[in-house]
Length: 399
Length: 178
Image (tube, each protein chain N blue to C red):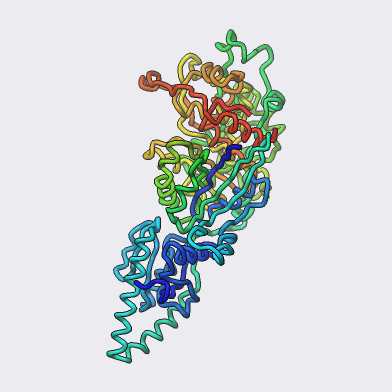
């Protein structure tokens, strides 16, 4: 194919300005000028990015309008059109050149038909106009029906709060007479989540998720409204009173007042300020931290390894000190809680509070399978880039 | 002085430019514009289009932040781009018709690089589309035998992007200290 002297004129579809620029450069460079990008009305060939938001629909419209211009579609997947020249992504120069050559052959074939039967040319001109009309982009985003509540909620996610070691004590609290960091006191540095608001909230969440209905959890304090479909809760209280309430062992004193009931009409009608919505996970994680006060759940044997199923979604959770490091280590394989603290050279309370929150969300638990305890943990190899990685971390943490 | 870089990749619209902007110490440079100017005088070697930002580190070092072009997926530049990279940040747009296809594509494409370094995945636009959930992504990842961080990310939020990069660094070495 004579590339540079007689380039194909192509129109690009389903590509933003930047992508179009990139494609123009690609045709000019690696494809050695086999084609040039022109306006739709001047083009001989259409090229679609069939994986883009609008590309699939534009391609569908193009085929529905029975465009006679050769059509090239770039896609990761097979598209199922017999009359479209497909180029699989990642786009390779040889494949693109072959597609352009095929398009050129098709054009020459049509030109030959027109020469023999001139009326065919008029029909083609009409199709070109209809193809131009098909240019209007029709996005194929997923469909969303946003009502007023949705609009209010759209931007109300709370960015994660990263607690430093300094702020940990004041924010999380402690148990008087107990030094959770003293290995001799590890055996009593535990708590029972069921004694706290955490336990009741966890049970209520499980019930609401199963039933799929909104409900309110009465607790002798402010009712907690649960919206299982949107995975959210609403509580008409700020963090300070919530922290205090979450740290109280309420099971004995308030047990007769704790009940999960259908949402009352009054509460249903009440205007709900967006800032008091929380994601269910973020809420449970936070109140587990406050119930824990640096202790671990009593269901765990501190001498047996625990596992972490996967990384928590930290951007939407309270990030306790060293939580990312603990997650990174524990996701490699089960370890005992003291071993984690020792490996990372951190106070055990940071491990205990993390594991309490992770257990509350069902992300962590005692390694039960024998294979979990027999598995060889990866050897701690010092990273060759430790220095630079540490400096990047300092920068990110503003130190 | 050594040069260090982190690569941001993902489909178009996933927020790569915005994410780089969120943590860069200078406004990100879109090198496709620069390259198009260069094509006036030069040719094939200018066909690189990517976003660029930089973090100035203590001691005068720089961390370079490169965003790959998202839509075209020209493979010829990616090998060059990842050479010497510290790790990969993969941003996925949850409003795309099938974000798992995108995830598979990018994990497959960067498989070798990820094997040598690490990857952290940020899922954007979750406020518009909460499905698939982060748990769904973790389930999908099981087949890749990869246990990497996956966070919901608003690429405009510096704290979100910062946490994602921190998780990437700790994935490389949990014992790191700032």
